[in-house]
Image 1 (tube, rainbow, N blue to C red):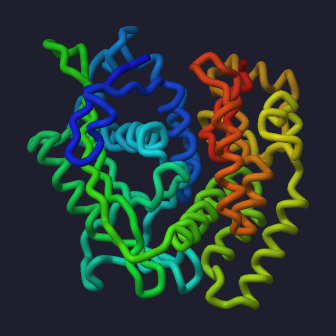
Image 2: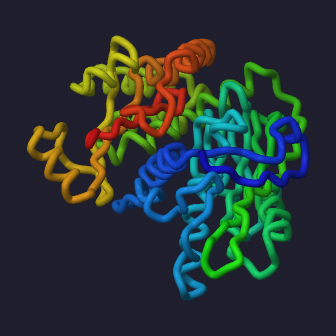
Length: 371
C-alpha cells in the first residue's frame, strides 16, 4: 500500500510520521469529489495505477505534465483527491459540502457557515465537513507545485481555512480547521523525491452543545448526499435534500413540508439491482446510478454486453449508490441512527483494492462493474 511521509503541525502526532492511502481510496475520493462538483462531466479516477511506480512509496513515474500551468492544475486536482481520502481515513470526516458564497445555510437560518470577516473577498476554503468520529471541520486542500515549498503553502492554506467559521445561531460551533498539502514524489527527473502530506489542524473551541454540533453535521450530510445524487440521475431527491438544508428547523412548517417531500422522493427512487452490493448496503438497498470515466450514464442499468463493451474500451464503469437507511436517517435528522449505521458499516465493510465494492462507511458505496 503506497505510503506518504506525514509532516504535521497540531494534534495529529498520534497518527505517526507515515500514512498509507491505497489507490482505491484515493480514486474513490476522486469519484465522490468530481460527482459533487457542479457541472462535472468528465471522470478522472481509476488512472492512478498507470501513473505510479509499482513500489511501496506513493511515487509518480514522472512529473505531472510539462508546462507549469498543467503541473499546477493536475497537482491541485490530485491534491484534492488525496486530501479527501486522508480526511476520511485519518480525520474521521465523511460528509463534505463545497463552500460557496457564504453565508451558506446548513440548518435553515439557524446553522450557517459564514465568512470570518464580512467584507473579505479572497478565496474561501474548499469544504465544510462532518463525521461521527471527526466532528465538524473546515478543510482546505492544495497540491504543492509551488516555488515557496509545501511548508509555506501549508501556512497559506491554513490562512485560507481561517476565512470561514461555523455558527449555530449566534454561537460559534466547535470545529477543526485543517490545511492539507500534498508534495508529489517522482522518479523522473532524478533524483527521486518522497511523497509527503503536510497537515495543520488547530481546534476552534466554540459554545455549542454536542447536540447542536450534530444538528449542523446533519445539515452538511444533507448537502453532501444532495450533491452526490443529482448527477446520478436522482435530481428530485437531491434537490429535496438541498431544500431541507436551506429550510432546516428555522421555519417549522416549511421544514415539515421539506422533510415529507424528501421522504416521498426517497421512497419513489428505485433501488439498485446489484444484489451483491445492495445486500452489503442493507435490506433496503442502494439508490444511485452508473458512471464511467466519461461521466454519468443516462441509463438506469447496464446489460451484460454493455458492461463488457465499456470495460473493453477502458471506460471503467462503476455503480455509485447511497444506502437508503442512511438517507432516511439524514432526512429525519436522526444523528443517533447515523452513528448506529456507521458503526455497523465499520464492522462489515469490504476492504482492499481487490474488493468489488467499497464504502466510505457513511452510506456511500462504489462497485466496479468491470469486476
